[in-house]
Image 1 (cartoon, helix red, strand yellow):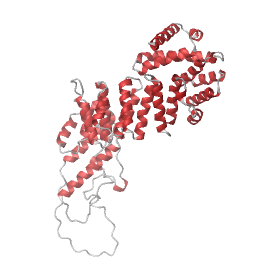
Image 2 (image 1 turned 120 degrees about the vertical axis):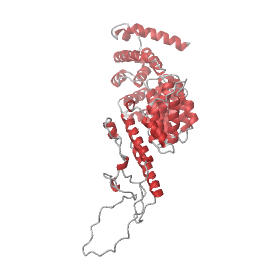
Image 3 (image 1 turned 60 degrees about the horizontal axis):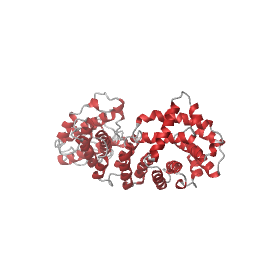
Image 4 (image 1 turned 180 degrees about the vertical axis):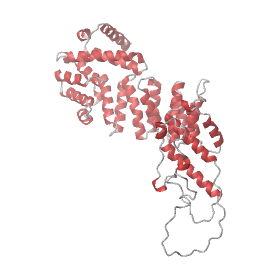
Length: 456
C-alpha cells in the first residue's frame, strides 16, 4: 500500500512536470531523488512488459539529467540526492552529467569511491571500476543503491570471477525484487550459468525469468542465452524440464524458441534434441498446430536425413516452400535434399573382371606416375573433386549470398571429405557391400561438414 501511494504521488508530480514545455518546472519543483524514483518506477513497468511506458522513460531521463546538471552543493547535502545521482548513472544516465555533479558534491570518502567506480564503469574502464568498488558491500547500503551496485559489480566480474558475479546477482535480486534490476540480474545469471555448466541454476533462473519478465523489451537477449544454454547443457537438462519452462510462454514464443533449438541442435548433430524440439514446434498449443511451418519441417528432416525412412524425408523436403525460408535455411534445405538424394542413389556397379595382365616388360626409361584411377576411398574419381589433401569443409555462406541460384550451393558428389576411410587399391575387384558401406560413411561425413559450416 505504501509503495502504491508513493507511486501515485510521484507519477502525479511527473505528469504535472511534463505538462510544461521545458524542464524548468522540474528543476524548481522536484528534488533529484524524486525524479530518480519516478524513473525507477517507470523502468519497472517496462521490465514487466509495459512498452507504452518507454517514451515516458526517455522524458524522465531528459528531465533528471537537466535537474542534476543544475544541482549544487546544497542539493547534495541531502544524502538521498547523492544516492539518486549514483542510481541515475547506473540506470543508463549520462556519464558527463554524473561526473560534473560529483565534482560539486561534498561527500565522505566511501561515497566518492562509489562515485568514481560508477563513473569508470560508465566510461568503459572496467579495471578501474572494479578496483574502486572492490571493498564496498552492496548489502550494507540502502536497498535502492545496493541493488544497482550489486548488479554493476556482478556485470564487471562476470568474465573473470563468474561465481562471485552470480552471488552478486543473487544479492541484487534480493534487494530489489520485481524491478528492472531483478530482470537484468536474472537475465545475466542465465548466461553465466551456461558458461559454468550449472544446469540447475540455468533451469531455475530461466524459470523465474519466464514467470516474471517474458514480455520485457530485453527478453530477446534472454531467448538467445536460453537457446544457447539448452544446446550447451543438453545432456544435463531433461526434455521434461525444458517442456516445463516453455509451457509458461505464450504459444507463439514457445514455437519460436523450439524452432531455434531445433535448428541449432540439427546443425550441431544432436538428433534427439532436434527431433524433440521440431515435434514440439509442430505440435503447437490450444488446438493450433504448426505443421505447415516450413522451418519445423526442415529441422525435423535434418535429424532424420539418413534414416530408414529416407523416402518419407525426401517427400517432406520436396513439399517445403522455399520462399518462406531465410537464406541460411534455404542453404540447409539444399544440403539436406542433396544428401537425401545421395543416400538413395544405387551403389556403383562393381568393375568388370579384367583379363589376365600381360607380362611386364622392363622399360629402359623411368616411368612417370599416371593419375590414379580411384580416389583414396577406392571409388572412381569425380570430375572437379577437391583433392583430399586440400579438402575443406564446405561453407553454406555461398547460398546465403546467392539465394536465387538455380543449383544447390553444395554439390555432395564433388566433395571428398578428408575423413573418408581409406581402402586398399590393391584388390582387383570391389565388393558391392563394402562400396555401399563406404558410401554411407562418406555421406555422413559430408553431412557433418555441411551442417558444421552452416550459420547458426
